[in-house]
Image (tube, rainbow, N blue to C red; front, side):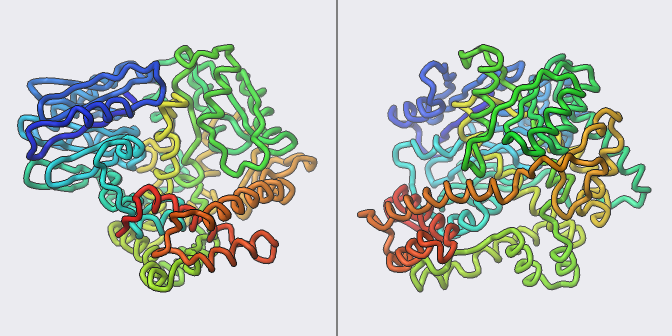
Length: 579
């Protein structure tokens, strides 16, 4: 199963026909989809399976229903190594009130367990909270869905903008913790269990990343263990398959994934979306030739900073195979997503770590925000609102760090990134999965592998140092072609052809900035002339000045104008209601 949603009356004895209809029709925007519906007088659940996995992910026994999206991939957890066996284990555990099976899960999944007769629903996230599950609890109902758009479609959905969540989105491009841009909607957090019945809401966690002890073993042994954990995660996801579709760029992450697949004797079809003439393009093609994969190249759109790779891949695999019918195209694609943060520690700048360790949290935040270009557009807000939001983002980061109190400050910050930055980066993919119809296989997010990395002393991991040691555990063919490395991180020991440009060179950045500038100015113009301009939140005069300065090139106010446009979007969605 890929998408599910449901509503349970905590006190009401019946649901309106309009609510049931909205719930079931909003699951997919593809009219060909057949949605399966379960329900009774005071509850309704709907599910959609795009066929990526062997089983459709639901289990109904003795009045209890479990719905599964993704794969739990239990490791020594009592399952038989299949998705339906894993679901049976988790369904039984929910019935018995135990979390034993969850602790053995290594995959990306979300699970809901309902016992309608008890007016009870249990919502469960994987250990990193990779797959979204949104929920809203009122006095009368609990509503949940794997995509925000489903909740937004329901009649009577209470749209109230959460100023804190919205401000965090303007800074990070995602809210922190369990927040969303809506005050009455939460997104289940990493390893969280939310248990709701007619009278109470109970939240707990079944796994803590800060419980993993730091190993004192030799770095070589740690690298061998991490490599074995990664290979184990690949094998669990393969489940005996002999063919695969995968991304293959000129960097390390996708190469490690494809190299592991090739080592398992899998026939791999690879895809590259880099600009021609770049390291990313040339080195990816060279590696594909060495691997012997069936390689396909599609160029990244001009001016696109972060294109929709899910849609691009969906189109590419259909075109490459001559399969224009989405129903017959591959449903699972292997991705190196997560490798740079989980293993490479790319956002873990040494000055940030040093300041955290010295107890200078404010200085660490200053350094991190500056290096990552994180800015809060206080000047766009009205004076009263600016005073309210000035500390919101820093307070949100501080709160997340305090929830990870069992490790030293540097590693704590890395864990903060894992359970916030990384899981939120996949939101767009899962929100539109009914359209592109692809599931990612993400071995860098395998929980057993992540645990093996967190056991390594942090100072060995910074600047891709441990990544390099780990990479040396692969077959020599994987290291036979140069790779693209991050500036300031461990360089590739092989010479990279001097004629190749870096994908982030100023030439490409200039084209992207020009395209983005046009988009930003157009959005700002629409905002300034909007009849529903959010006067209580934004200063029209300040937005106008920022737009003029940005258009003239005198100042770069892209971040501020984008934030103002985002604020207007949710103001409109919520019809002026905010908290």
